[in-house]
Length: 302
Image (cartoon, rainbow, N blue to C red; front, side, top):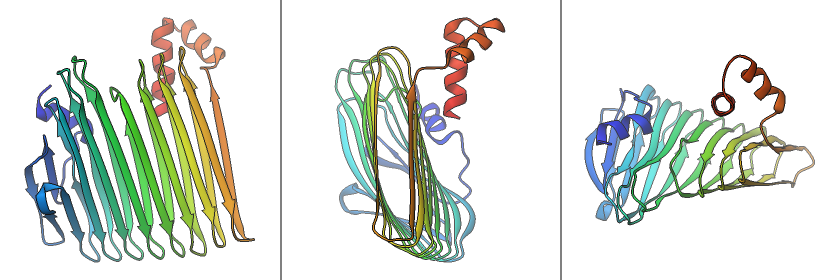
């Protein structure tokens, strides 16, 4: 798989009308900045600082990473400094094409400082590919600081092919801040995936909605952990839905803590196999069992 194909997968073929920073095999490949968005490299090529000016709107900013060589292990720290009254989309993600017998690993820590009244849509896609026996490992960590009346929408997708991942999201929300996270993870074979959310609702009228939809196939194993603390008059809803196919295992451990009498917190978890009636309906339309399972899983992860 060439670089362009891999980039198109992890960015969903998005066009960056704002700035972008493309990293390939541990090095800067290409970068573009503009009057409202500046990108500065950290020392020793260890990451970047992204500065978005106040009142920046209607821009799509890309920061994809791809690895196409085996035996690469890197840790990248990216900091996003987002001004007031912004409305931007940021597309991140990592693709690994490993055809070697060595491990390829990308660990990234993304820290967001979101200014008052700003809206950020953050899309992160992960994908693994390659015929080699080497592992494809990704460990993303996201740290969110949401100022007054800001909103962060996160859409996190693990498409396929990632052998091991631990993804961690930590957030603190001020007055009126709103966090919406939709996570979609697919594992197969003997792959493992762990998702950890730690959210502090510190501000009055702050809100958080965390939704995890996962499919575990074959002998893969997934775990979901959430720890949501309501420290003010606030609202949070945590939901984990999982489909198990084959001998896979899924664990869900949602924790909610109300540290204020006006905190309203809800959690839900559903884990099970594909419903029999769904399969029967699709089989009656002429699909075989494998095709029917694929249709159901695709619909579930959309």
